[in-house]
Length: 166
Image 1 (cartoon, helix red, strand yellow):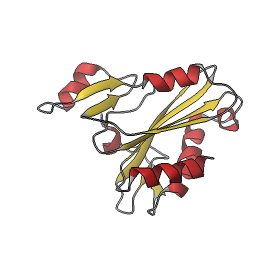
Image 2 (cartoon, rainbow, N blue to C red):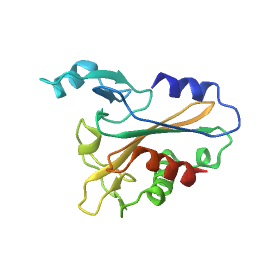
Image 3 (cartoon, rainbow, N blue to C red):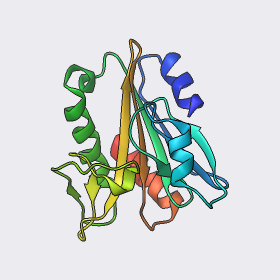
Image 4 (cartoon, rainbow, N blue to C red):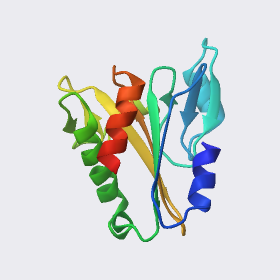
């Protein structure tokens, strides 16, 4: 998570797409959440926690695929409201996924990211959230940190995302 923030702070004029998965039992939580409340969510589980520089809810990284999109301040997506840039990024992501998805249109409240869709998140055909993210804007640009819960080879998924975001 700190690596993403470092990339944002040292960003030039070129966007950066960072793709990664987690080794071990990790979860991240949003900038505005408190660690004791997050720990309570995982009572009885041996899990390591890290706080994200972006907002959003708790993300259990034990089975997800994580990506970060870092855009310079000159990028067109920074000229539109945050909610619109969120949806636009997810529309691009939607094209990269091998399954049929829909954009969520309503919000659900909850501490965990994948239990609480917001407008623009991606849902599968059963209405389950499979892609969520959070954003942070600074003077340098935009940091969009996202998580995917999808059964696909991570290598193939990485290639699809690279193609879609290029």
